[in-house]
Amino acid sequence: MIIKKLHEAGVKSEHAYLAGIASIGLSFVSWTASVKAEPAGLDRADRWGIFIGEWAPTFFCMGLALSQYERDRTENPLYADDPRAGAAV
Image (cartoon, rainbow, N blue to C red; front, side, top):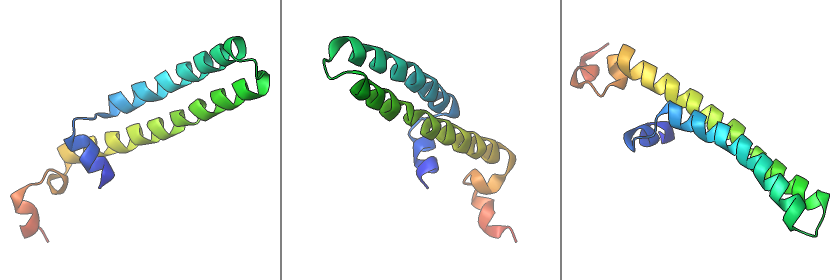
C-alpha cells in the first residue's frame, strides 16, 4: 500500500536508488563536517555518520519494492488497475 502510494506520487525506483547513494555520500560528509566543526570529538562524528548511513539500506529496499511494483504493473493487469481484474478467476 505504501509502495503504491509512493508510485502514485511519482516516486520511481531510480529516485530511491539515488537517495540511497546520496545518503552514503551525505554520511561521509556529515562525519567529516562533525569531526572538523564540533569540539565534541570523534564519538559524536561517528554517531552522525552512522545515523545518516543507516538510511541507505532503507532507500535501497524501497527502490527494490518500487522496481518490483513497476515491473508487476507492466506484466500483470491485476496490478494495472484494469477493470477486467474483477472478472479474472
